[in-house]
Length: 121
Image (cartoon, rainbow, N blue to C red; front, side, top):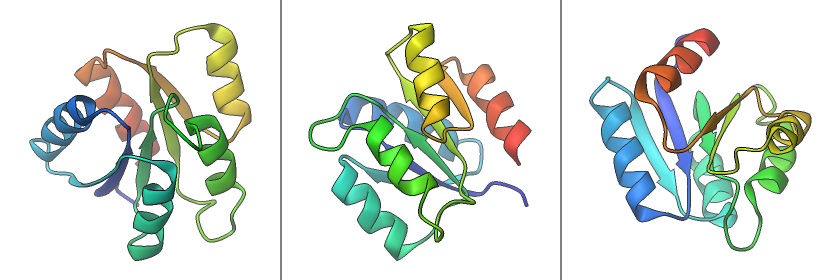
């Protein structure tokens, strides 16, 4: 199934704007959430084809939220790509252990991100 709808979860308005613009220009339909609670509301409203998940956020962090989403039978089939400034190998491994399908380090390289999205689609 091709990926069309993407949910961006990030507490940075700058990052949300950058990624929304990048993805929209490539034909994706983008929804955004600035917190874990908002992300769960967005999921309930419309199940996306992919979630791009920041890690460092107030409240529920991206690792916790990824674990919640990927273990929920309603959303377990939605792939999550961690999209974070946390660039340590231990962070990447931990993100993948929480259920993420891939891991991208900020600043995001557009070509790298598109290749990862296409690999899932």
